[in-house]
Length: 274
Image 1: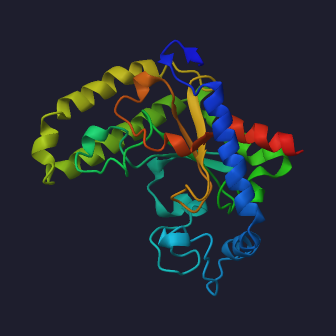
Image 2: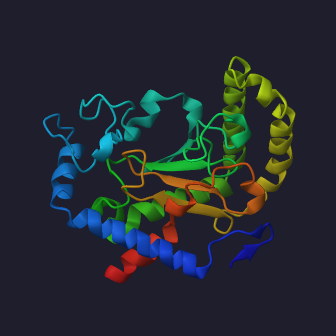
């Protein structure tokens, strides 16, 4: 198991290979389904006359409203800046946006949430990178075209953002804002009294952890991962980024680890096909 200065963090090689195999199986299942190319073409053309039995299976609302007019909640993620406050867009490159998570990373701020569907992020200062182009998921052939050029650009965008300028400070500020927003909601919630018992601990944890967070190295200390269709909950390609060391995940969601496929596993799988 790979370890860094913050403790045991990464999957064993066997687990990594399992995740790579998981990606390959899901990718092949999707691309070999005759509906996939038809529905992707219609989805990218914003057609209202298609039912999307594959992309919108089990009524999981993969199709955002305003995209195809199906009435599902949401908005087209590639138009993210048009629908959100400016402070949620942390950085913009030619091909992608880095956006802050609107959810807090700390499960103590969600005392009533079920164990199976956790709303908190997967790690301290969980951040996302989304492409500007209309790409459904990492199984979409467009996502891995040109030797995975877009996926590599998304990672490079974050690394540059973290390494140069005030990227770290912007991520921390967005994460603290998420804590504050959830804190305000809890004050008028039935969960308020229970949360009040740990409220001071939540903010103390943020203040102490951010000191170590700023010392992380972008290329070594973060998970760059994807939830592969049909394990996705949002119908637009997005990369999850969060620290993988235990110290930064103590109060964050673990229930989605099984479906978080590392970018490197995807790159290796795609390279083997070339």
